[in-house]
Structures are given as C-alpha cells and as structure tokens.
Image (spheres, rainbow, N blue to C red):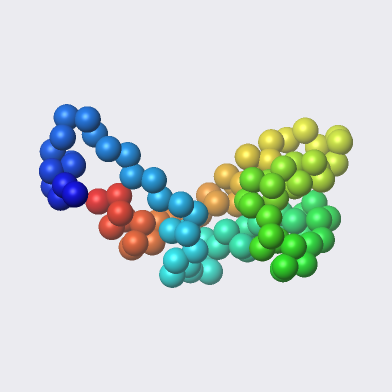
Length: 99
C-alpha cells in the first residue's frame, strides 16, 4: 500500500471523502446537526421520536421536511439550512483534515 506522501505527490490528485460523522465528533453546542434538524422539525411541525430519527438517513429526513413545508411557503429548505448554519465555525478537527 502506498504511503500518504506518495499518493499526494501523484499527478492524479486524490479525493478524500469524509462522511457526516466528522460533524458529530466533538461537536460543540453551536454546530449540532441534531439540533439543526430538530429545530427544523419543530418549525415545520414534524414530530418524530428519537428512534424514528435514528432509523432515517439525513436525506430522507430532508425530504420529509421539504414535504412538510406549508404549500404557500415556497422558500428554499436549503436556504433555511444555510441560515441556521450561518454562524457555525469549523472545529479543530475540521481544520486539521483540511490542512
């Protein structure tokens, strides 16, 4: 198996896929995916148990939240996510991976 330095020196630059777990690791209270999703669920009147939320992927929950919006509210759910995350800042482990 090649060393990381060899991989990074290759002309074909690799991609590093980091799953959502990075956002759950040493999470601070200001940037919590769980709190973000629960807040949006509350805003749209979606009431799931913790167990039900654990059984869904984030994509499934996003689709449910999108469908739960009032018909007259045509604003983008993505925009609401971005607004909620506006003040989030990367934690040290995010900066380490990017660096």
